[in-house]
Length: 308
Image 1 (cartoon, rainbow, N blue to C red):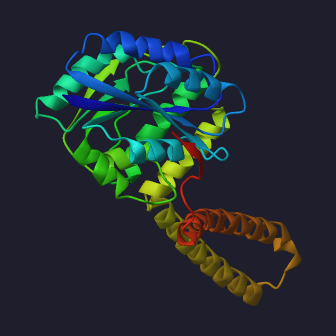
Image 2 (cartoon, helix red, strand yellow; image 1 turned 30 degrees about the horizontal axis):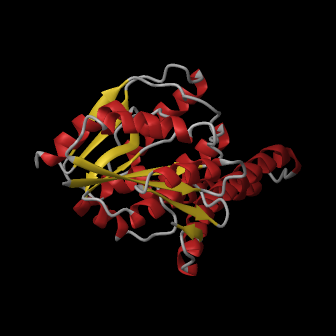
């Protein structure tokens, strides 16, 4: 009998844990030839999320959990889930039921057929989200696919069913700065995407703020593209050229007509402009250096307080 490991990152989700479990179990009843195991990864919740998870474990031995010593982020939770999963197949699902469990039978069948190593999902609409959030999401996918050699499918979710071989390949990438959407694509393997329309949360509120998503997008760009560094180099070269031309112009003007006061405004403008570009370039380089700094420390991706 096939075993499916269901990885469920949770953070302050006490209202949704039981609803999620019941919804997935309803689908499980239709899949009599598949054994389930649940891995709830608690990312340092401050509410009663773990109380709800422990209630589930008390009545179902297939429920397991990992609790973090503090909040390490969803990427760390995904990695912890993949590391602890023991199934022949592994799936990642959001506990808020925005990832429809009803798709699981089709996803499992696609992987079991041997034609695909992974069946993923992608949203084809963002109904219910703000227009500005939708616009930035679309812009991110357009930009990352322009500057990164790794293709990322617009609207792709972390919700996917993967073979053990693919999961093992992902676990070999032990980098500290993780961006799972890019990692899933980078390891390759034959992947098919099922499309569905956006589904509202079943309960509770999202822990993702606009700025949190923005920082996450920046992390994705820095992790999977060197283009910003190339842009920084190009800006530096361009500014060096502008500075050289300006210096020649100033020298020639001084030789012809020595009126230094008359050029004060233009000089200040050029200095401020070049200084601004330099700070921008240093900021881009600093972002990459920051990632290198975190990698060379070799800190663990997460610290578990309890695994059961």
